[in-house]
Length: 329
Image (tube, rainbow, N blue to C red; front, top):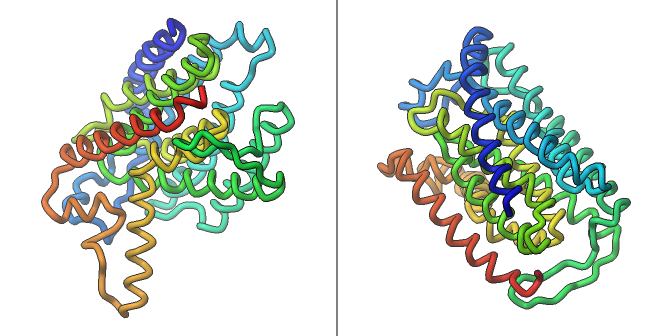
């Protein structure tokens, strides 16, 4: 437990300090966010806010994981490193996407097909590595019922790959207003830290990464709360999506993502329903705007209120998730 608390504090301090230097450099590079033209009109004032700010918590959590987890790695324990490196690959994909947007000065980077292929490839490599290391099981644990359903390995890997890609893009959709993806994912990381500590009876090797990232997100929130001084960009949101998905499988409880990721799922479903309804009714809209946070914005909710409400909902569902897997650990 001491290591996890240390990781959280170190992740926070490193990220906050890195931000002091990174944000001015992003401004010099003119790495400003391009605002989507069909978004809420008042978001136009955010144009030019430095993006790719996710670099600060990627570095902050990474340094923490390597520094505090070095002893475990010398002892042959690498699960926390695998999860970080997997999330980092998604962060790199996001960085390429952000960089292209910055260079082209428009809100389009990699194509949807390019993102999907890269993300699917990363997911497959991670899953194969986890299976090779004996860290992945094809026995699907069902929360609350405390049962395992054994699935054919090929089918399980296909299922897992698409769950990962879906989770990554769901987190990406959630990153639409100041501090939202940051605060929601902070709660999720605290959940995984607590579960990791219980899983290993306080040893906390697997809990090291989520603890470090929770600290990193707290440090990033210093700059990302409304009005944001920096956005995480796809660099940060894809990294976070990779982290959430990877932890679900590293802990061998992927179905728990339904609970801890309730906001991510709601955001994604709002987009799917909006597009489906729009096409079926030839132009009518189910929501004022999607993803879901924009609907509430247009309904009069402030960004601060959205952050508090969505984070609280995530906290409630994380508590439910914890109750659902207690028997597992």
